[in-house]
Each structure stands twice: as C-alpha cells, then as structure tokens.
Image (cartoon, rainbow, N blue to C red):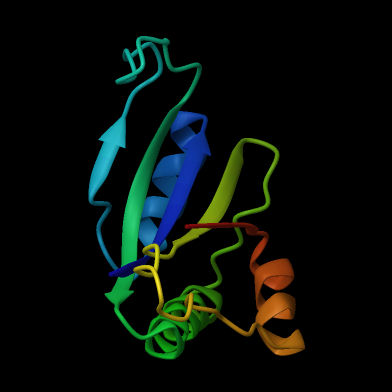
Length: 124
C-alpha cells in the first residue's frame, strides 16, 4: 500500500494555529522532550496527518491534490519561521518481476507544494 503523510513540527503556538485549520485531525502527536523510538530526544513538538493510502499511485496523487487544495482554500501556509512541514510519500516495494510504482508530479503539483510551503520526501 502506498501512503501519503503530512509531518508538521515546530513551536507549539505555530502548530496549534496550523492544526486548527487542517481539514482532518492529526493521527499522532509528540511533544518536545519526548523520547523517539530510536532513543533520541525530540527537539520540538509536532504531529503526523494521514492524507491517504492507495495501491494505485495515481489514485494516491488525487488524494494528495484534494487534501492540499483544501489546505490552500483554508489559507493554511506551512512555511513559517516557527513551523516546518513535509509531505511524505512512501511506496511499497514491488515484488521481484513486477514493475515498480511511479508517480508523475506535474508543474501544478510542484507549484502547489511551493504555494503551501511544503517540502517533499518520496521513499520506497
């Protein structure tokens, strides 16, 4: 299953401002000083929001477009001095002998990331 997630982290006041405007509630949160699973201590607070999951990368991209469009319509801009945000897209690894999934981002998609102040991370 391919997954799109939004990671937002920074100061609590900025996080609260963004969280209040999001179309959905965060799936998980953490506080500054919490211990991460790898044993390191978190240096800021933050949260994760699930945007969508789908085996078809094109269907997942439609979910991402819809969610980011909703954020933009609500006036949410993630590029702030007190907050950083990243759109994370993770692909499942294709079984041997199968074609690896791909996702084609248009200039409009990339522009939406810039307009909303998001960085992009794509992993498999």
